[in-house]
Amino acid sequence: MQKKILVIDDDLNVRDYLVSLFEDNGYDVCVAGNVQQGLEAVKAKKPDLITLDIEMPGEWGPRFYHKLSQDPELKNIPVVVISGLAGYEFAVVKAVASISKPFDRDELLKIVKETLN
Amino acid sequence: MTKQILLIHGDTDNLTVLKNHSWHHNYGICCAVTKKESVLKFKENNWGIIVADPFIGNGDIVQDLLRIKKQTPRVPLLILAAPEKMDKAMDLFSSKAISYLQLPVNPKALNLALMGASKNIALERKIDRYSERIAELHNAQDLLNQLFEEVPCYISVQDKNLRITAANKRFKLDFGGPIGGVCYEVFKHRTTPCSDCPVVATFQDGKSHTIEDIVTSKSGRQYNVLTQTAPIRNELGKITQVMEMSTDITQIRQLQDHLVSLGLMLGSMSHGVKGMLTALDGGIYQLETGIVQADENRVTKAFGQIQQMADKIKKMVLEILYYAKSRELSYELLDIADFAKNVIDSVTPIAKENDIRLDISIPDSLGQIEVDTNWMEAALVNFLENALDACILDANKAHHWIRFCVSKNKEGFISFSVEDNGTGMDAETRNKMFTLFFSSKGSQGTGLGMFIAHRVVRYHGGTIKVESKAGKGSNFTILLPFQKPDNLEDHEIFTRDIDDKERE
Figure 1: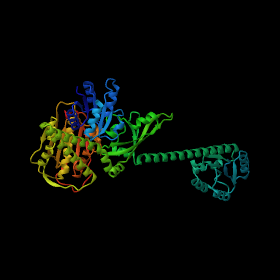
Figure 2: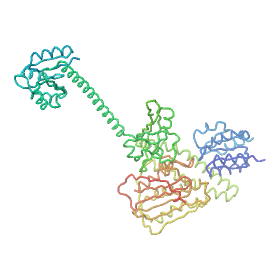
Figure 3: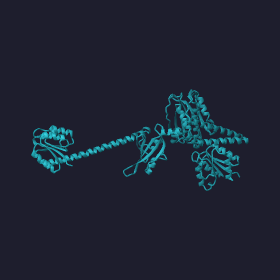
Figure 4: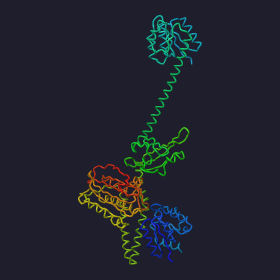
């Protein structure tokens, strides 16, 4: 069965990029443009992994992570932070990995693959 | 203390009786029996009380007494006179003497009169001391008033509801005469108190608090201020009011901005650059895989994305160049209608993509305008892009529109109006939107676009009028002169709320 990845990023171009990249590599992908949409999507789709941007309009990424970790059913979903904001690694301490934009796609795919296996 | 009394009396016997009696009562007495002696004594000029018969035997001393009384009006004068001369004495001295005693003098009566004079002196001294103190208090009050009024900062006194109960001259000059107005309305043009209000904090803990902020004057001009608070307590030690003192540090901040601008800008923009590079990388990936997979849709989309990112990067580099290096504007004479059509053409695809209706009004007969094409086009596109973003971000309306109207106004300016029904702005965003590095768009904004657009318009001798309301939409009117300006003045930006009625 295909593994499902939820991409949360406010930049439409970055979302499209990640969708193509993950789909081309055999993953099922869903997207969200902000924290609220991300929370709705994670409950509806139950993804196996989440990629999370940090700075977004309205609530920022660490707030999503905080709300996610409050839910016993969802708190174990692995989160990979992908952000251009310096110092973000301190904001989501339990992320399985933190990747800086612009990222190396092979490195990202390797992290995703290792995490999902 | 013993009073020095000068006793002038021609009758030596009576004088001796009086002198002896007065000694018993601890009055220091000096006597004179003749006019000559009297005149000599007057010269000593240090008498506490003078008791005198103005008509002593060998010549009267009326004029001398009147002169002494004029010179030392505070020295009490008691007049002694024979019964037949009493009326004359009273006519001559009237109220200048405090008491009139008939000769031969009853020592007890004299003593009582002296005691009265003594009390008079003590009272007068007390009154003198009070007067001096009142004068000192008045001086101190004047000084404090002057300090309050003239101190080169904004001072206001506020009650618990943040109502201004007093304000100094400079405050009233720049923010109006708002006694009774609330601080957040007067200072920030807000409808609710600020979350980090230092006055509220001082009311809570009685300590002084400091905050740096941007405030907006009655003319719409913005000031960077450093605000400090101090509690004002009543006699029971309870805080009844709080004083807020704001120092204008705009010039310091502007200097700092210029000094560190490049470094700051790079730091602030690195996030945006990273996002763009990621999206560019994404476009390249889509292009590569689109070609490999022979997916025409993907290739077309990838081209669009790469083109879009190249434009964004170009715009950002132009902005950096503009900010990093002040350059002379390069004016050209352009047909206004052609110029305006070029401007709107550059945003039409994004409007279509996001289903935003564009209402365009560009008459052909507008004539020509002298502008720096690149910069003015970038500035106007920036206003339109902001309108697009405001519509895209607004999830509360089913249909969105942007009106772009170009016209001549009565004052001889050309007007570019950009109106939208997007998210609109609250008063704070509206006041700060032209500030360097202020962005309301999260990761999508650099905080440079509006700052530079404002500068470009200003350097062309133009003005910007902003009307906006959160949840309703915004209307920017950019007024430009037809020719390049000879002298540049610092033009104000005017911002205000739009009435709900106007918008609907």
